[in-house]
Length: 254
Image (cartoon, rainbow, N blue to C red):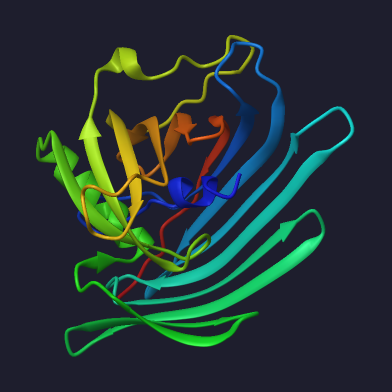
């Protein structure tokens, strides 16, 4: 469950023309047609004249045994400058009642990129690879590359809701048939714009030989919306299907 925030937060750049929106997802355990529902995820993205304002909420309950369930709730509130050079955020993770709160600022100045993070372990300054993009700008870059016809490529994205570090993201276009079908009982959701079937793997560190933390397959729309997501990890497979979508108005800025 803690991996879902990283894959759901992908949005914007001016060239990619991402739409401000609120997307709601149903989370399931496994890929079977009758896979049990284990939670929900909501991403609310608002656009201001100077910044994107994001609120994301992921909640779930995973049965470990007949008598024990794993409860998790993850919330992110953040503001990312439209330039992509500044991010301020607050992330709260609650696992079986135990809370962990993180406050962070990421700034690019004089060619350097650094995160200032305050967590229960204390304050820390984390240098980041110069090519790291903020979450919103990262998806804008991905969409631009897909629109240009790139079959595979790599980028680095900062993960505020999970690890508070830069993750290597390897992106590849895949066949339509590799995307999981929507469960028959789910109502189809109309998402505007073109889309691509993609696979993304997320790795800690820059070395290609390192094993990914997780990977997912999904249909990615140029509006910044993901649907029919399948997340594969070493121990579990999770799915996320879009159940509701609301497009927000864009501001009129001088």
